[in-house]
Each structure stands twice: as structure tokens, then as C-alpha cells.
Length: 195
Image (cartoon, rainbow, N blue to C red; front, side, top):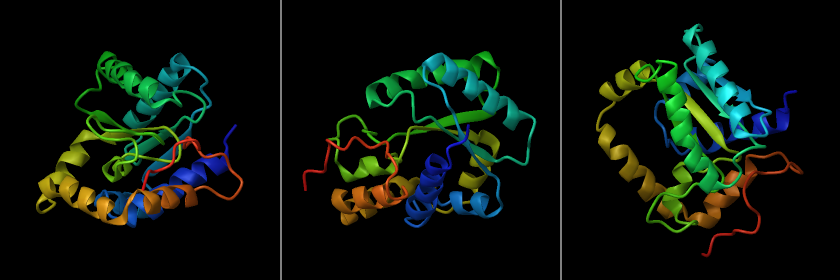
């Protein structure tokens, strides 16, 4: 069963955070062309999620009109440590399917935290999303976009500067605003920015 609230929250995040803040300069074009697939996994364990990931990869393999898939999984890997550990299994599945080099998986999570940072450091918001998401990208398309984008190496630096300027409180509010009123957000409500 599809949960439109969860999908709407992630779609809003892509529009209101990723595109509006220009965190990924390649995202808008694909969304406008309707080539982004938002898929809700109802998995409640890692094995089910791996099966859903494989199905999403197979679908993309046979559907060139799908540029990218956001596999949203609100009921599994809610703790960031477990999510982060799972990414190695996801990459292994890509290799088993002989799809490494064709697709890659980016990761987003409500509690995303880069190594060497504090939970509420602004730079973590480049990868914070309303719910856990495995983002499947076509490597050839990504390589082409990067090759045609001026000063692509400056994107992370620019993002961090922008996010630090906005601050964790404003970024947390932006993330919360992605979810329709009354919906359960994937963000841990007991963790608030220490600004």
C-alpha cells in the first residue's frame, strides 16, 4: 500500500530543500522532466528492503525513462548507525547483480551524520531527509552531468557554507515543513539542534 504522506514529504524535501537550496544542481531538470521515481518500500526488515532495492534496480535497468529512484523506507533502518551499516549490503547487492558501474546508491536519513561532525552540524543537512532513502542514480548520467557542470568540485564547499549560514535551527524547520501537518516525521523528536 502506498502512503502518500510519506512520498509527499520526500517530494517536498526534494523541491523545498534540495532544489530550492540548489544542494544538487542536477536534480531540478530530472524532476521537471518527470524522470524521478518516488517509491515507497513497506519493508520492515533488511531482507525485504534488499528485495525492494533489487526490484527498483531491475525496473530502472529496463526503463530508461526513469533517470533516478528514491526508495523511501520509513519502517526499517530508522537508526542511523544501522542504516549506515546496511549501505555495504546494498553495494554488495549491486555488485551481485552486476550493476556496479551502471548504478550507484546515495543515502539520506533523518539522523544523517558525517564522520567527525556533531549530530546537529549544518553540513549534515546535505544528507538529512524526512525519512530514510536509498537514492539510485545512473552513473553514466551522473558522469555526463558532472562533466558539463562548471566547477563541480566547489559544490560541497558551497553547500556547507550555505547550510552553515542558514544554521541548524532553520534547516531543521525546513525539514519539518516538508511533512504535512500531523504526519509522523522520520526525524528523532528527542534530538534538537543545540543552537
